[in-house]
Image (cartoon, rainbow, N blue to C red; front, side):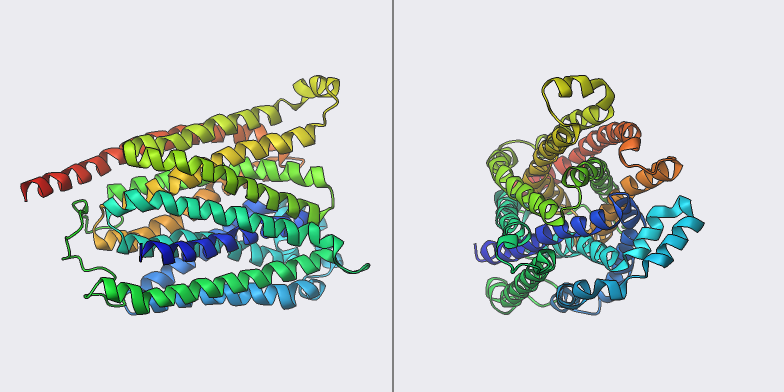
Length: 486
């Protein structure tokens, strides 16, 4: 519990900020240049940024303590988001190119409309990329890499499901904050004041404060908790590998990170999970934009309520998830996620691509297609993300524990960060190709092809989970045999 409680605070702060940043980045980008900008940001700028981070991490990880490296990673993020809210967004017209320049570029290069808009709204594009990196670098890698070093496999089975509940609580709380700062704040600002600017200022101020709290607790763990619990603790080696007091699986050793079959399978799972979710979300966000027209506050407020609902549903799923993690095999827990996403996503895509056929039925019940598609997509993503938070995160992190220390650290950096980014980039590249080939450059027009890709990738996900489960079962059973012999 001395490890679990402070780590829970850190995770809460990280994911609290991520909910704010995720909702805000979508609002900024979608209303600036449409959902068509998202694939280009994820497929190009996002992948380049994460590749640069991994290269720098590999360079510094052997020479700098993990604690100092953590500060070097998180502090620049906090500084940027503070500057964005205080300085950049209020003066965005000064930083962006003129409308005449962008109009001329569109006329000269009509096939590259989305790429031109990335440049036209470059501060929003930069915010989007850094907000995505916060999720990949700080949440997915920074927290879990630390947790995997100080928890054993048996502890992980007990506590990683509880970490998922902490994450859901953060979404529940931060979603309400996003809704208040985006929608409710309109009733408190003076007439003539830009309520959206006030929203940005409040949200970015909260991000800075919560980031500071996480850094403070992380620092306190290194100065107190870990040194008290582990006499051999130092800033580079967080847990003594000779300490076998707690049952840990026999390490899966492989000198080559690139040739490790375990890492390859984990990478496949991460990549395909990113692809399927982003294919669904891009279609949904375009429908949401059409539904709210030009109301940025309403769009961001809806995203806040959606985050609240995700947190609430996820907590319900957590109870189920903790039971599954403790009572059933790793495969059973891991395969539930792609199964749920496949069913929910297929229903949403089927509705989108059947618009013409369903239109008479919708008119009969006096329903608007955009309204139904928004709430149907919200339901599909809500259930999919709840299943992900409850089971995907814990099962993925448990898959790293049987690996040897080098694979667990360096391998995780490569697989989690590059793999996670490739998942988003993969769906982005598919969407980019379809959009550039489309004459209308319309996100909704490519839905049938996105549906086909989504179905194939879900099947690949299930097969990868099955193959990875065999590796994990061997490692854990071998460890149990050693324990009985001793």
